[in-house]
Image (cartoon, rainbow, N blue to C red; front, side):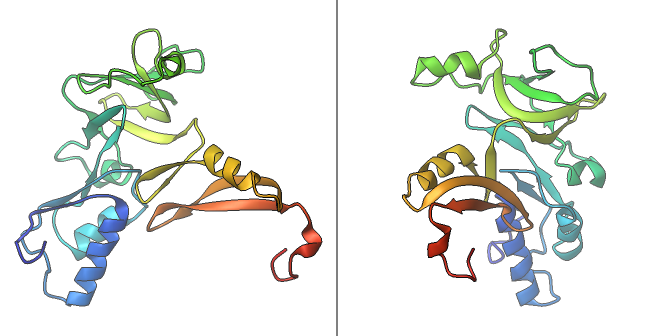
Length: 224
């Protein structure tokens, strides 16, 4: 990327840290002297990453977008957004994208109120191969239910504030806690298990499994 004079650096958060490490190893001379900005995705950026990219790599920071497999490339921050919005990964829905923020009953909530993010647009997928999934994935208006909690400001920016569904985002990949728990629970040495996501500055989240062994007396003292 440096050799060919990259003007935009992109990908998930771990790549951003790799660029910073490469700059540190390179020395004080800018490794990417023509850099305009970075583009990211796969999950909200860690606190301080935007400012660090601006300070150490140059350019206008990281424009972190939002999307999902069922409705990709929903939106990015607007050019000229301040660092507060960039730090929060607040995005503006792209052309043709419709956003609804709803309560638990599917009623649209006012701007500034947290609710579930639901989406529609020209890039919305046609549906799942298993039609039975449609009843839980779409609402009556045809919007896909993202399972993400969000707030939309008066100026239209959408900020993701949490998740309804139990999903861990590690290195930009969605990992189902239920799937991992079912695999671990099938092991004869496991009586019970809970999988959770722990904050990780590089990966976004790290998978952590809390296991109750079927026979605790067989475990060594240093690994209760």
